[in-house]
Length: 449
Image (cartoon, rainbow, N blue to C red; front, side, top):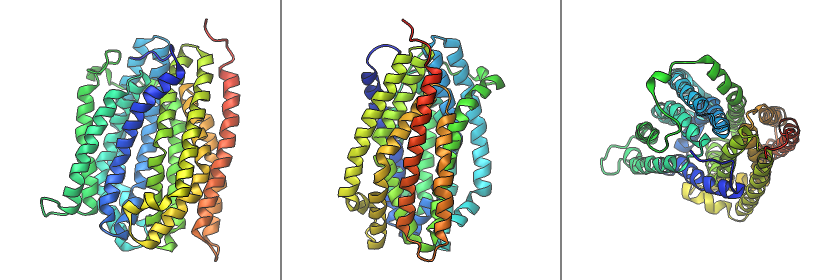
């Protein structure tokens, strides 16, 4: 357990962010590695795997219900020096996550294929997407318990061991990807399905490793089967904090689905270009995401300890560092978008679409960074509803206008990208206003002396 209520906020933030950032980099490499080898199979494979990959956001949204709730409740309990409550919330989060895994398997295999068919532009892309998804679903199911355990450790200030484990799983995935996708060394090429199986096998190894590691890297949180019996009062506390964030991720899923649906008439090249651009954007967001992820447990522990001055300072430092990172990334996307896209495609049309997408959406990077910083503070304070409300505005400012644009005879792809930028700017403005109001309401009591 790491006490984040003492010492330099900046040092805590950068120290934890370094490990979280490495962890996120390797987690994202799952998708980059898959995309790289799948790209060798053609545009239909890229479009199909990218469309099927949207199910990842759906699973991520569901897993956030548990992971954000347990991170916040464990962090606040650690800050308040309440070891029993920290263990209660950790145990119950794992219990919830096992139920989530079963539900993911059932729903994924029952409805995932139909979802891929609805999003893809042609039959070839749909077939590739189905093949990938059916092999990838077990990995999505394992996301629930692994995220629950990782988030409980993060709430207690433990980040390095999980980073090491995720590094190992990505190395496994990197080794398996060319073997299973392209048949390197075996002569048996599974194509898009191989990408899904590579991730699933690596996820199984990672989940087993995490169960073994959990009680060995710290002694504050314990992992005992007899304590996993559901206690619905604890589930309610976790859900109260995690549900709004889960809905936020669900809204992200809806937005990506709408984009794929809106641009489907532009063909597999447009969907492939957007798929590549989206993956690149997720990857270059990682440094700012790491800062935001580190801020949540710092804010949570200090909020639990009633060190409200340090909660405010956490946001200031997070916003400053995150904005600097995002500004740098914006310049990179304006200067050399083709350079980032070229490893994934040599199709001139796909390359042009990817480059244009990155140039346009980079205008909202700084605003996205502020949204992430605000979201981490809402999580730490145990009330994520304001962040959800700000995200929900994009249903009005982006989804509805995008669907309307799709029916215009002179519709162009750039219209969707510019609309996305405008909606993020408005979301940021509302999120910052709501954060200011929350600070006044929750941080009104003088800091403990």
